[in-house]
Length: 525
Image 1 (tube, rainbow, N blue to C red):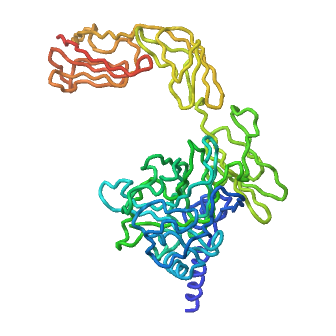
Image 2: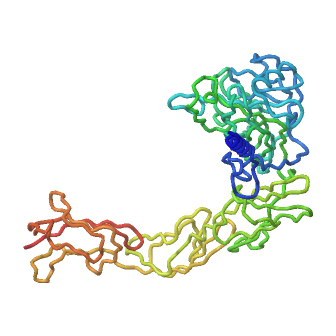
Image 3: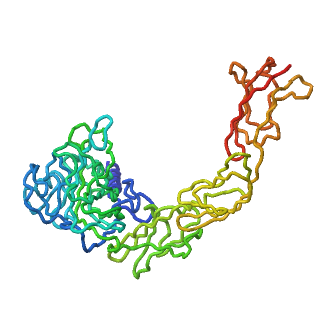
C-alpha cells in the first residue's frame, strides 16, 4: 500500500511539474505545451520604454465622472479627450474602468478581473466584439466597440508612425473556466481626416461593423495578439496615406467564427472582450528599438550578414519567423544561401532586462526563379512569351522595357532583368522561326504489307506528347497512347476495326505552348 501511495505521489508531482513548465525562449520548442513557440509565446516578451505621446490621456487616468452602473447610454465621452466611437446600444460603463471608483472597481474585479498592477495607473478600457450566429453573416452584422480621439495635430501623409499599447484577454464571468485563454485577438487602428466622422454608423444600432464601412475611414494598421491572461506590450507601425485628424482603435474588419461547443447565450459564442492601457502614438523614429542592419554593402549578394550593435554584457538569440535559430547567438547572423526568406528578429538579453529588435524581412529574390533558355523557337505568324511576369521584376531588352517580354520575330535578344532592389541578371536568348503547322496522314492501310500499316504522328512533327487518342464515329475510344513513337494498327480489342472514317485528337506542348490538334483519318482495307 505504501508503494502505491508513493507512486501516486510521484505521479501528481510530475503532473504538477508539467503544468507549471515555463517556456524556454531559445530552443525552438513548445516547452509549456500551449501551442506557442519562442517569440510567439508572451512568456518571451521584452518590455520597452516609451517617452512622449501625440495622444492625450493615453492611460485613461483623466475622466469626467465615475462609472457607477451600466447605464451610461448617453455619456459617450466619459473619458477626457476620448470618445466612444460606435453609437451602439451598448453601455459606456462596459468599456471604461477606473479603480479609483469603488463601485466600478468591485464590478470589474467580479466580472472581468484583469492582472494587477495595471500597466499604468488605475484605469483601462475594454474593447468588445460581438459574434452573431446567423446565415450569410456580413461584417456589418457585428457590433464592434471602438474608442476614438481627435488629435491635436494631424498625422502627416507619407510619414511613418507607431502606436504602442498594452493589451490582454482575461478570465470573465462569461468565460469562467478561461477556456479561451490562448485565443488570438486583433487590435487595429483606423484614421479619418474629419473629426466629425465620430461616432460613425447608425445611432443606437445593434451592429455597425468596422470603421472602414464608412466614408473617409482607412485601416492604418493592425496586429494579432495572444496574451495568455497577462498584459502584453505590443505596437503597430504604419505609414500615413493622407491627412489623419482622428483615430479609432478596436477590432479589425474580419468576421469572427462562433465557437459552437457552448450552449448558453452569454459566452464567447456571442462576444469577446480584450483590454487596452498605456497607449503611445509617436513618429516611428522616436521609438528607440534596436534595428537589424544588413552588413553586406551589396544587397544583391547571394548571401549576407545581419547584425545589431554589439553591447557589453549582453547575449543574443536570433529568430526566423519567431522561432529560434539554434546556435545563432552572436550579434551577427550569416543568412544561409538557400531558404533564407523570412522575418528575422534578435532578442538581446542584458543582466537585468531584454529587448526584441524590430523585424527585418528577407524576401525571396524573384530573379532566382528566372530560367530563360539560351535557344528557343517561334512559330511563324505567332507570339512567344520569352520572359514571364514576376512580382517586382522588370526587363530591358533590345531597347525595350516592360514587365514581360513578348516577341514576334526571330533574332538574338539580350535581356537584363531587374528586381525592386536594383539587383539584376543578364540573359542572351537565340530565337529561330519555324513552320509549326502539323501535317498528319489522312489515310492508312493496315493490311500487313509493311507499307502505311500504322497511323502515327510523323517524326517531322516536333511535339512533347501528352495524349494521342482515336475514336470511331460513335465516340468510342479505339486507341490511346502517350508514347510519341506509338501508332494505331487498326485493331480494337484484338479484332480488326471496320474500314471508315475515324477521329483523332493530339494534345501536347510545341514551341513552348500547349496545342490541341483534331482531325480525321480514313482506315482502308
